[in-house]
Length: 167
Image 1: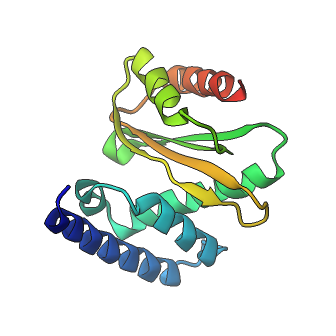
Image 2: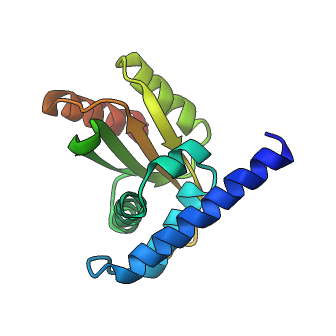
Image 3: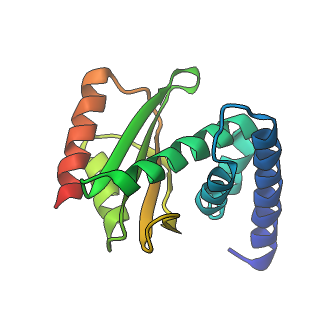
């Protein structure tokens, strides 16, 4: 990416984050605005311009809110990973959210897992974030699959990811 392309993405990121902050300030159902803003910034900082431009502020807030909830769950979880999935029926997409201790090559392993299932990842965002209450770095992943998975396939993916991440 050249510096001009980088500037365009930075401008799109700034616009998107500004919209997210504005939408958060108007939202009454988001309890921890500071954490959601932090997660939104971490998640979307390296997102593609196409991704940022294709999502409304409300959808970005929803993604950041779910991801921040997963991060909070991870703090009290006894397992090595927290996995959450959701179906976006309006857009025929499936989302997976993962929170786990920072581990090398996790993106490669997760990507290969979905490939082995014949699923196409349209977006994979993977920031390392400092956990708000732990003094450690956490891998936070947002994965978007370009289809609405059946409940059976969703459960199969959750089980497979759980096995993969527990190693």
